Amino acid sequence: MTNSDISDQHGSYAGHTSAADRWPAVSFEDRMGTVEFRIAPDAHIVVDSDVCRSCTTRACVMACPANLFAPTADGGILFNYEECFECGTCYLVCNGEGAITWNYPEGGHGVVLRKS
Ligand code: SF4
Ligand code: SF4
Image 1 (cartoon, rainbow, N blue to C red):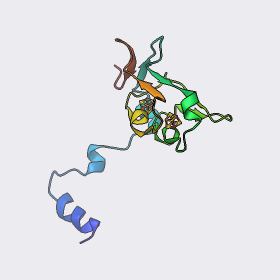
Image 2 (image 1 turned 180 degrees about the vertical axis):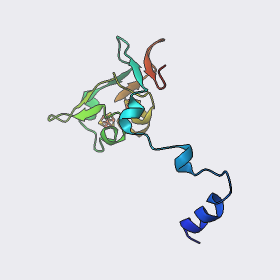
Image 3 (image 1 turned 135 degrees about the horizontal axis):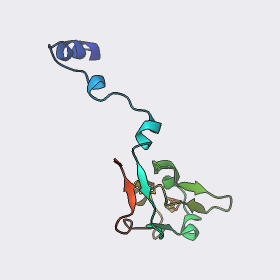
Image 4 (image 1 turned 90 degrees about the vertical axis):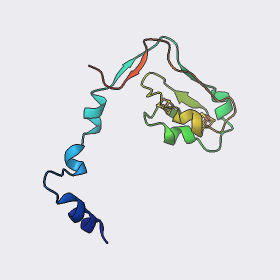
């Protein structure tokens, strides 16, 4: 059975809407237009660049969906907390003991995913 067979079988009922109709494609720019970052004065994530110098994976650079980690020429990492989604991925993938200190932003700050 092919995907189109499945689609024919399940998409031909009267009144049945496809996934594309129910969740129409939204551009990254449009999605980001609904996001607001209420930036706290103090960083909620701190990266110890000295620990990063001995890191062999640099996993944070690839894993962060907001692209907030940038490798430096001297082997360290530059990090900017201001547009963080608070997803926790960097903390999970990091293999450098003590490289990342992670907290949520202080009250009233941080990402607002559906700003009104
Ligand atoms: S994965 Fe961790 S230790 Fe490696 S560069 Fe990123 S923050 Fe530093
Ligand atoms: S919590 Fe998510 S968005 Fe924020 S720095 Fe880590 S990986 Fe990037």
